[in-house]
Length: 447
Image (cartoon, rainbow, N blue to C red; front, side, top):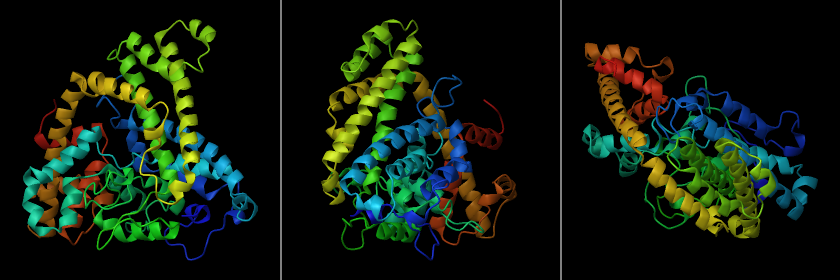
């Protein structure tokens, strides 16, 4: 892989090459990506989607929206710091092609902003609920009518693949979705493979999958344009990661490790004494003890330690990336950057405590249970109505139900796979609160 190709400004539908040196620096293409994402309806819906605590009414707990904004800020810092090193190492990128270190920051920030845009309501339990509707629920009836890979898309429903659809899928009058630059799409693609074979290697890029069968053709087009390295054979499609995808992943890893932990502290799920013990290990070399002693509230103390911890983790992730940049370009770095961090043990300790005290807390479990019931009901009712309507035999109830389906989802889908995926896509874009409202309307009463 080479950086000039990896930094492609091409957008879906382009017929001529976009050159960096011809870009207007007041409205740079990579920054346009950020703007298009932040103004999209799919991004806006993240304001009422679970990060840790589903349907939380506590104002300081992060939603997917605030989490995504924070990941984009960390991603921008990672991108700029790496970009500075890359430009210094390959000066022709600036001298011949006009690239700047801030371009790297803009790409990683935009991809980081979108990294959760395909996640369904109720967090990762939402993904599992959709998958289990097909694998062990009423959706099992469709298995024999789908290809093996189409079926795997559904039973292993993946927010990353759904996010690629959100950013790129066309609908009447909206060709190419948000028309994001290929460089930003490449950085977004943390798992550049299809749903099968499942976890064929221990390579971090094979951990999950990154596109549905319906998006395969365009995914291959993006990968080819960027010069990603193919790592699958036969009829299977998969690639080594775009180098900047490592930075998007690191930004997410840093934020959810530290900031979810901070939420747990503020909710009282993790004691301050524990928190200080764990965070001090990350910041002991950079803490200003005198300043720390002047902070009189728990919130201010934790906030100060969180900021220092994130700064240290950013600098360390940049070190790991730069030290391994040539291996990454050769597709020979099968790890997350945080796997090679000098702080890995400390991060693992924090995550372990978060799983025990936060992710498995009674409040989270109770509301995830509710999420399972809500998603299962919505899938069942809307899939039945949508398929019955396609087959020309909708019941009166089906017709009523389809009337509350948003207008942009009133599309004709010819194949069963596309229809099933279309309803999954509709439900995935609902906020937690909106999914609850649909559920209450369908079952006829309010909890």
